[in-house]
Length: 84
Image (cartoon, rainbow, N blue to C red):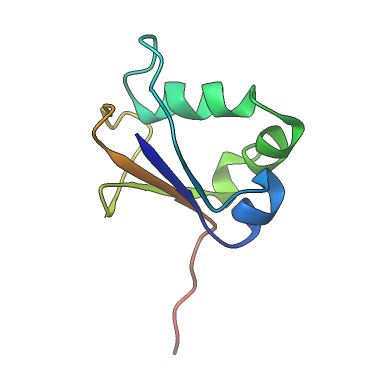
């Protein structure tokens, strides 16, 4: 799986992207985020408030129950604001 981090999420986790082998126990976004929170203090900080983070699977906005696999690209980013 390719994980990509944007904006302040990237700053807190300390990397822009990485390739991981998805543990067998992870099958959706919710369990991925729980697993990521346990990786380091930076991940725990970045993912501590789920109202302040958004995610996409294969460049499509996703919800917590979105199924994921090793072939997916997952992006984590702060909420975006639009123009006028």
